[in-house]
Length: 395
Image (tube, rainbow, N blue to C red; front, side, top):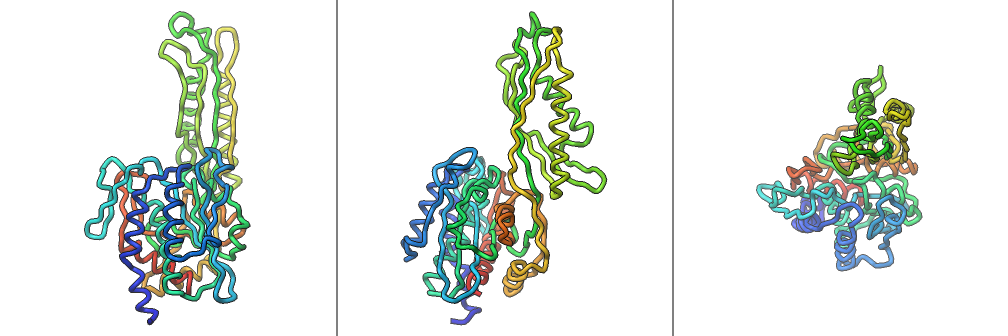
């Protein structure tokens, strides 16, 4: 069969069937086992030996725990070449639970308008699964290959961070399928700190003795206003230095007639520049400490602030002449598409793979409007991603 015929066949009904089934399976971060079971069942049914399929214990090391680890398939090559790795993430955001995928004119949406679709990143999962199944169906020659479906990407890229890397077989390059256009190569991404802030004040009756209390809400409000006023919240630009910060979650308080004694805050600091990212983190801490010292009761007692900082992932930027970039560009352009290079302001599993010295590019798999109820999957783009993955795995 000719190479051209191979490419046409790879935009297959089987691939579309796989992605439609995968998007319908619930699997938010930490609850991906049903998705792992589906993929493993498809692999075994297609003749992939159990001996090359494994799951690790990554979920036992993550902050939220979970019911399964990363799923890994490690194939020996039919030729002596460097090992290549293919990745995608299994989890979806909670809004996608209850997805009912329906396709009309090549666009897939959830039939339930109150849910997201889950194409982020079940389309990437389907690209990997379809590639493995086609290799076995066609008995296609290929270099040593590793396929890894990561858990808990949506909650700080935790699955790739805590993965058991010895299961991968020392790949020399990797291709991560997660995003929109398969012709766009993401060769860099930002880095991130996540910050949990515990603000402790002093409870008292808000009407009878407000002056005896110390309001944790007032401390937090003053700190956030300070950050906003001085340009350290939201889009952060200081000279040529760029980054972002966000206070995204605030929980606490007990009643309107009680001075709030405690708040729990979740925030983040991001930048492609590691030193500037640390500077943003420093400014967040300084603002909360200043506010703590300014909000005191009549007795001169002030509140307390405690920080718990997690290094979520580091930034990276590949050289455009890196071998993995050239491989991906060749596969894309071999299909008559025009490739483009991009740098992302969000985190990807590729952040940790590059941190582990595995040069990794990310390609899209047809998603659009992720993390919203308007999410769609473009089937034409998804099929292009399947063809590109085939070229990268067998070319």
